[in-house]
Image (tube, rainbow, N blue to C red; front, side, top):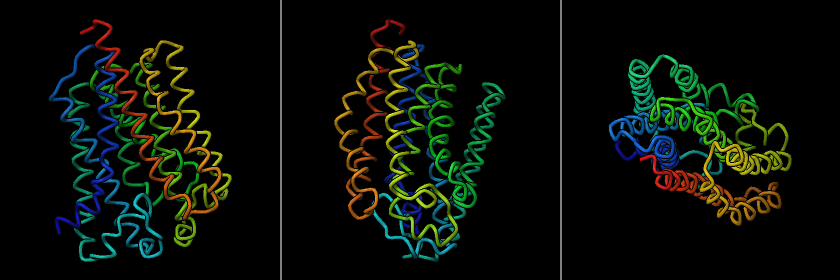
Length: 302
């Protein structure tokens, strides 16, 4: 059973959460030259619980709807397949999802009590997205596109920075917006192989509504926007010049853009680019975190 719970939690994807919290911590270091280890640990625990909860709810609802039996699974799309192989773990999956969500709520209420009720402005929508993503948000193309990015960018990365620094800065907004573009793109591209299966259970995301080729234009636009936001943040001094380190990733980004544009209509040919997309997103986030930490050490703030 423990192995099944690890499967529905999708522990191999939790590295994205770790990268986002490291980015927020690096931003705090840049802004004030310090970081509370205990606060970092609590926020990381809360963020991991949130990610596990949304994954487990997704596994549970997709198993119940029959979608898991229809998808052509890849390492990056179509779910883990855990409940197809071990259907008796469905109840435990729901318990895992619900318990993780309760932990998120508990941690969020504690932080709000300590740092201010304003944190609830991002906490409450974040909790709603965790529960509603699979059942409801996936039926609205625009919400389905935006929700993952908002969850990891605005609510997780910007929210963590707010907690660490006790202020909502323009720097945090820029980093959150960059992560939002990247993570929305992550889920968007992962939907390409699942179009036929998702359509059968009533989902309505852009690869279904617009088709894969037009959705590839959205993908390209969001990836380019993430780099434009980086440059805008630097030009307005919200982000330090050291953030230009992110541009090291441009050759991989160009390879990804051309590959997705060329193979958008051929899901089987897209599989290497699903992997490249995951790797690029992690690389950009970690390069930005490195640039912020570098700037914090160079500024003499600490």
